[in-house]
Amino acid sequence: MVAEGRSRRTDPAGARPLSELLACPSGTGSVLTASAQTVGFDAGQTVFRQASPCQGLYLVVQGQLLRRTDRMETRITLGLARPGDLVELAAALGNHCHTYSLVAQTAGVLLELPIDALHRAFDDYPPLRMRLLEELAREVSRAYSLCSQTWWGRSRRGGARTSAA
Image (cartoon, rainbow, N blue to C red):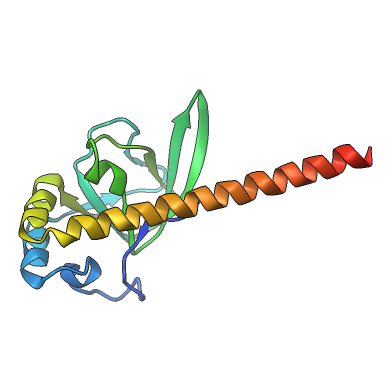
């Protein structure tokens, strides 16, 4: 699948204010920045597990992570998270339970924006919630499109083999 939410950052190595990354006023960005916590991780470490309580919205600062989910006794790889990606939009905006597990492929750092600070930011600047919901909708659309293309390609190849036999 694809990265969950790509922040507006074009240069992953360049530091930019959080308010600019999330396209919110600087005061709202300051609320989030003041409460943000860095979360370091090592290669192979599970940063969080599916169905566990979500502590906030995450921004990948450094490293590469793999998003995995277990559905109907099957483990599915959803894709990679790289620097600049927002991680767990659905959990942060929804019922606050992780929708997948996040496993580090390399060592790195996440910036965690705690749920309570995120809610204060939504109260301070309501369009932020809508922007994040729009990004989540784009993510779902990209994932659906990719799944449809993959399924369509497989069914065409399978059909071609069947008709050639």
